Length: 479
Image (cartoon, rainbow, N blue to C red; front, side, top):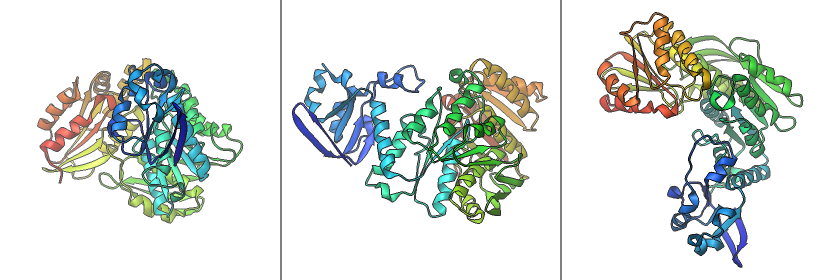
């Protein structure tokens, strides 16, 4: 890919072989985007303080950056940047420049884009979808990790022209699209308009910024509203708020998936077969097949159904979908089963948490396997739930308390209400405990666990429950 501009009277013409927003990891030949607080404030970012990457432009060039995209207002008058003027591409909004570049690359490529959103399950559904399409012979570009915000979506798209890749190397893009603030999904759809848009579920997450669950639903509905003309909407029929979004989609096909309601793609005869396995009968408009999914919980069955819906849009037979799902693996820190020395099993779901996914995972642990001696749930605080956070945590605790787990611990803040709710549901004080930090919980848990225990660790990113998993790994080396 070529980039050219004129600056200080000299002509810039460099070969660009990648894109970066972190001066510490810029590789030779990459185009560096220097982000500043002003750029972040114009877009959907919820942090309260941001670094000014313009200060690191010299380091980016030392690392071999071919050029730097910078905000013109910020550069003007900064004498420290004067030596680099001829290699600076000046814009009004650096994030918008990144997004416009990504949009142009996608538009020139012209092949199908799958957008996936939902209050939970986005990364797993994205990974399952990419895996199924890949096994079926499609060359898939998918979002890196959980790159799903206004920077991540654009950077994921730019993989089409990064590191020696060429657009013609790919047949389809599968992009995860997240939301923290109103209007964010609409912005994603402007950058990468989906041919197929998946809405997994609407749950009480990000209420601090979205205001209400109705606000969450309206935000997620922008996926349907942002489809390309004639595009396909894939909707969860078991979620009333998601199912109603079909009314927003008059110009194109709608496919639904479910466990309970009548739908186009469904799962029946669902059963847990040992820890980390789910079996079900898959039905699609193209036929039926038995599936063994190496992931626990009904929520992961729903994620697999969403992937099966997308595969159906590509006319992939259910037998092929089943074979692909059988070789899938949980995304990192999203339901990974760790079998540690000393007969300890850890279910690492520490990447993030919300009420619905916590309940689903806790229920899966409660069902456990025949050889499990104790079922232990360590639940970190669920963040960004707004004014109803305490009540939501308490009700979640009540439900977990009725599942029959042996031990339930809460970690940080409103997770104390999870414990209070569980006690109201009948769990004893001996079986429940609350810790102010993940470090405190980790120190206590390594002393508690024993052979035959099954431990679920789950919490919002800001609670850092991965600290607990690492402590268990350190004490009980992985087999």
